[in-house]
Amino acid sequence: MKFSEVIGQNNIKERLRQMVKESRIPHAMLFAGTEGTGGLPLALAFAQYIMCNNRTDNDACGNCPSCKKVEKLIHPDLHFVFPIVNPGDGKAAVSEHFLSQWRNALISNPYLTLNQWIEFIASENKQASIFEAESSRILEKVVYKSFESQYKILIIWLAEKMNIHCANKLLKVIEEPPRDTLFLLIAEDTHNMLPTILSRCQQIYLPPIDIVSLREAVDARTQINESKVNNILRMAKGSYVKAMQLIEKSEDEERWFNAFVQLMREGYKANIAGLMDWASEMSGIGREKQKQFLLYSLQLLRENFALTIAGKNVAYLADHEMNFSKNFHPYVTEKNIELLTDQLEKAIFQIERNGNAKIIFLDVALQVSKAIRIK
Ligand SMILES: [Zn+2]
Image (cartoon, rainbow, N blue to C red; front, top):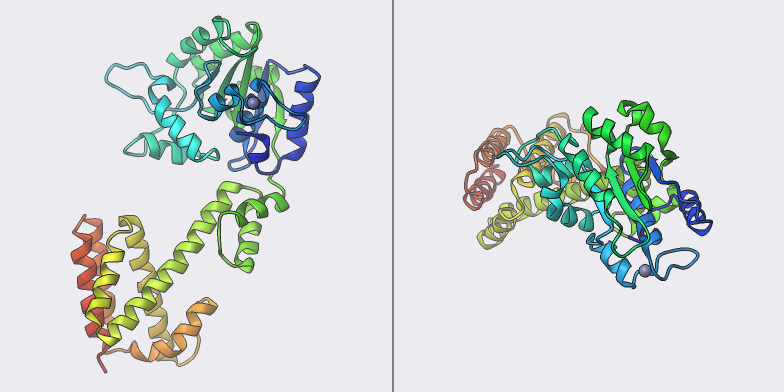
């Protein structure tokens, strides 16, 4: 990862480059910042910059053998420690066991969150920690001479997840640092860390990402309109992670609206081929999204029924939903509202119990088509 790929944080990048230029790199550093501000990407970019054989004043080259290895996270002098779930089976609870998943997760998303990471490695929601066994591996890694680079670099992601035994052993290493070894710690919450570790590290505080950089990063990832993006930037409070979550939610809602409109149009026309296409598309989007769509549709139907009953806009509808509902709501009446909502609720129940999505959605399509044509 190059500095240019890290979103914003220009002052910190400049500080890090300065340290390299002046050959004054502290042997232990802590990047402290809330989720989504970029601690891990910054540490990665810093490591790559230090190890690059051909760096410029501003950035790593991205092309030398060293850069290539750092980008694939396979540089022999670059080590990682990160929270894991206890693997059980008598295996030592150390990061190494999860290294291939770690590379995949981090390469596809350098702004990885702890929740995403746990989902990646555990089938259920388990507690993740940096266990005591890790500390002896850390010691092994730092005693050897570096292979290819001047420095060995150890990146410790979410150092606050270190258990107390591990933290105490790490402290001893940091107090008597082995030659040419750099410790780059990343933390989102330093309150639970040993004060002695904090005082041994040069601390770098990451502010929220500036709005201009965040907007650029968001614009590169989405087509949603400017007013929605403005809202999202305001709510994200400088967190790239939060911004991406809000974008995904917004994109999903747009998708659910379009799928709802399509269902009602094809249903009203009783177009069997169209309804089958719709059902087949919906059956491929995954259970969680299917449930979200069904819940969204229930909500929109109820709002339309409210419009029919009250005869005016009492509902909480966005502009595009209101435009559609103006003409659609007369078709949602006391004669069919129960049929329609029962059908959707039944589908949610079946989806939650791992029913066959193709059959469930075809049934939804056909029953909704019948119900929406009731005069
Ligand atoms: Zn390079």
